[in-house]
Image 1 (cartoon, rainbow, N blue to C red):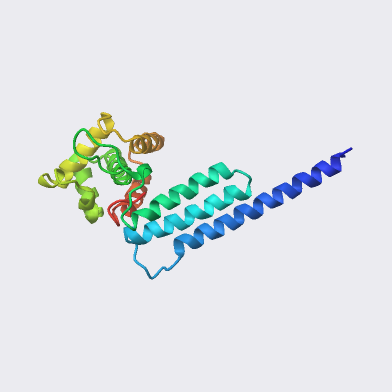
Image 2: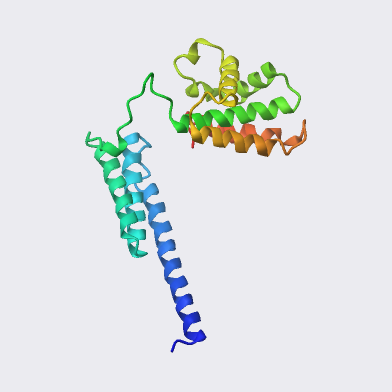
Length: 214
């Protein structure tokens, strides 16, 4: 009959094994994303890195006895790698849109960060035009987030348009809406004209470095 001591020993052993797997997975995923750092972050090279990282995750689930889950990560890694030889797996083939193709979630998340910076500046007491103008001055690469249609307008007008569309729910992007909702809820906890205004600007700066930060 198994004693309490035996159960405690088995539990500690299981914890140690799990920790070993998790640490190994962390190290291997980090290695996958840092491999060949001299290679630029082109879509081709980034797909290679993502594929390698996903294979590591597949192995992690295999070690934990969840082979079906591991197989899914492996198939995703394989599908991403296939893109580098021109093969598009059905999993990664976009659905046919009724109108023009929507902008990526990555781009909309970056735009939301701009909106949150704008909102913080407006809460500090600036007018909408002044807040938008300051965002433009602080984030000179913001034009990378502007679509072809928006290039005909001033950047201040574009920022206000993004804000209006997001608040009205016209942007059908779940990630953007969730990020906006969480950001506005957080900023509402600060009193108007609080000293926290600088933080959203700094946070948004990373969103415009490549035009589409996550």
